[in-house]
Image (cartoon, rainbow, N blue to C red):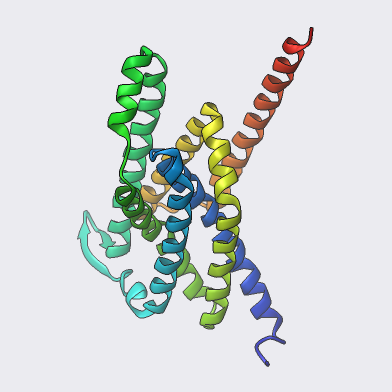
Length: 247
């Protein structure tokens, strides 16, 4: 009860919850794009299973705090710069994100210019299995969660605060994953924009792995501005369609 009366605990809880919510938006974007590779009947189930497994992954990492902190210990040095397991995980995850997003953009753009028969064949060939999608979601969630868990450990000592922040983000993701995913699927330009965000996040992860920290505020400000511009574009397009439909 003494902890609940401490304002520093509530500030830490609010900060960690905000951090986890931002992380949750990244995860929703990635989960929505991966789930879009599945048949429509399986997409919603893939989102829910992916989010629940993300919760299990984050809580498991949280319970292994000592091991997580140990990942920051230097393993080797290249030209005087030390690399740890955390750095290698961030670099590998960042490169995977860049490669995956680039491949998806290529398929989206190239598929738009294909004849219908060729495009449908390419779509069928690119359809993923349920297990493969869930595996990729779990893999990337480890990369996304690693930094937030390390940050949480540095901010507070109370595990219940960290668990509460994680559970709050999971509730948020479960509530908004389906509408966000369906919105992304309905608007191809939004999907390309989301994929571009993943490339940006991948670059930030790689830079962080090489010791060049990019303030997250700059990244998310740029993403928010891009979303604002895209929303204006969608509003203008919808308004033009309505005016064109009038007799």
